[in-house]
Image 1: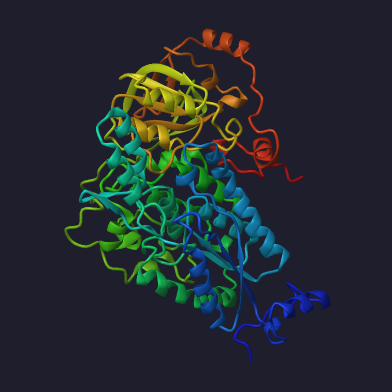
Image 2 (image 1 turned 90 degrees about the vertical axis):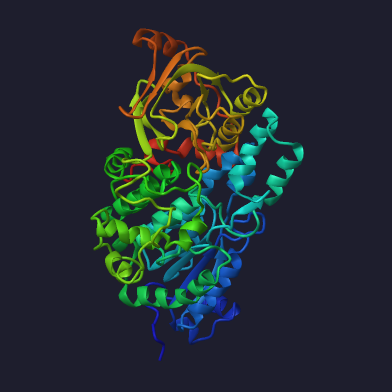
Length: 559
């Protein structure tokens, strides 16, 4: 007798379906078993994803060992690092929603009883959780793991080092040989970008949500522990099926508060604001930008992790990993320990036997000696951002910047100015018409911010945009400005030389002109044509919500 019998009321498997499933190799007995869809985001063109198909095969073996049927299918991925700074970056954020839609579509059409998503790069992970929440059938996510750090001239380097090297070469502080060799050695193999950039941020947040296994976000991509984790997945999905434990039983408001805590404590990416709001929307959990500010006010920054710090995710793994950090937070009443997780146990139960952070480690500061007493994610409002903006302020940049606007209507024009030494101390670089509709696709600005840091201007200029930032960005930067320029947000009205104030202490982003002048400029403004004329980006521009709403594409009335 099968350990788990398929609920035939879910999928009646009529004659045609039976015939086609026999054609793919399933037996009569197999048709009585639960079918587990294993969706891989693996592809050869990106180190974050290059090993995921192998992980999916290992997961299938584990699923089959539980007398379940495992069926692998695939969805897309986009490499942010490769597309960064090009028109291809406009497809990165839309890929999140395409991933969610494709996972949902196949699992729903094929009546899979459960789903395991195998994710690697930035948008893979929120896309996976959005789909699992919509499907609401037993399932979880597996993270492919972090990359090892690279090395050049006995110094650890990573992908951000390569972007900053462009600014250093333009400034003449490194040789052409150093530039080429940094690029050559920055990414030594499989795994997602190594700092607390977006991939590791979202993997940590999803583990805190309870939607991946303990240590899933910490194990490096090529570690033995990651291989061992794959062998456990079959038992996990069997237990979820047996207990009928579904994502919406796990994705509660309290679980999202746990995710917020871990993102802030670790110094995570500003992209977490987009993705957690979108994931919460899929789970019908209320979450807004104001929640990020509330928890940032209550939560210290402890992780000395790149891009603002000195360590990478593998360093955190060696001193105890994300579970050790969560245990410290739980012991100090900073997490909800009663939240259910995919293990069938509460978060508190999962952490009961986890070792504390290693004595003397320097990756995670103590609660008594934080890097910053409050969080690095700051939500700004004001006459430049009536609906909000997201700043990443670690304290190393200062908490206020007053400067004069240098306005660019594209990332390319801003890059030309930076590399041609046309940006001076005191400038606030404004890059606009790069929002979710104006991009379209809300591209990341790692190339200009990396060039700014590489040119030695990191503490002397600021950058604001209606686009977004890579998790690898650091410096005095503000993104996600809403409303965006394309829909007539005040960022569209800035002119060269206008005074701009970024005040993270009082949470304001201000354009220093009168309301009267702002109204005059608004009366003269006309919306430019959308940059996309057809296809995915045109559809995205017409359906996407604002950044403050998570850039979701299904925010429509249902009645």
